[in-house]
Amino acid sequence: MNAGNGTDHNGIIQGAGGYSYRWVDHWARMPQGRAFGKTHGICESSDGRIFVHNTSADAVAIFDSGGVFLGSWGGEFAEHAHGMQWSLEDGREYLYLAPTKMHCIVKTTLDGEEIFRLDYPKESGKYESAEKFIPTNIAIAPNGDFYVADGYGSHYIHQYTRNAEYVRTWGGPGTEPGQMLCPHGIWVDTRGPEPVIVVADRKNIRLQYFTLDGDFLRIDTPGFLHPCHFDQRGEDLLVPDLFGRVTLLDKHNTVIAHLGENPGIEKVPGYPDFPRGAQVPGKFIAPHDACFDRAGNIFVVEWVNGGRVTKLELLP
Image 1 (cartoon, one colour):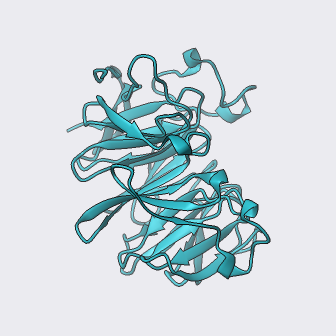
Image 2: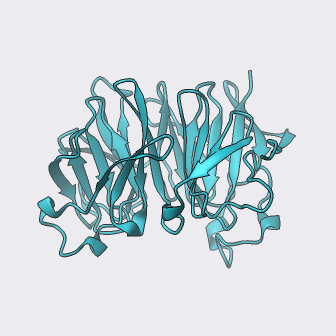
């Protein structure tokens, strides 16, 4: 196994005040002879392990809190690894995977034991074939229902019970309220009086809010570039933005901080597949997912060749 050998760039501080972070570049590294593919998803388990979903034979790679590689599984997802969501259900932990062009959702234990595999939502009446269903992320509600965002397929949101029973579908392609173009990320936002669904409507460059039953509530556009997904800590919402930054929002969705800003990076020829030397500490290229750990540190994975996992260490 490798040692955790991310580079702690002590001179690079992101944010300000109670939201100040020290940049730790390439925090998670694979053992010698193995490498990340594009890093797409990231989450933390209750014991502090960090799970990274990436397009390699080590599709679900696991690291301890110091960045040391602990093992991996999920080689069958190597070409299609994408969204990954952690869930605690009746005292047991699970992962929900959205392996894009496998046209399904997979629920597993943290060790990779498959609980179920859910095919495309035939019940919705929206699909002529499985190929039109290309899910990108999953959200889990407090009652165990889960919601699937078909971000790369037909632009719908699908709701299921905790037992994977189909409930309803809403959305569809377009720019009007309630319609979506690449609903790439999805989250159950519990910062208000009632939990609600928030969708990263990426191509429309906005957030859309819905009730847990799929009724449209509102649109928020707090200065995003290309919002990808979410994580939440208390009243703060974390939003990785594909075009070179990560955004923190308060409970009113007012911007607290933009982290790792890299203005105009998406316009540089070859984006995002630059050589490794172009991954400059302190600047993101293509943040695709991000999560808090229980100490308030932030971990960011990027959609770049060879992957990139950055730790933003919360300063006291």
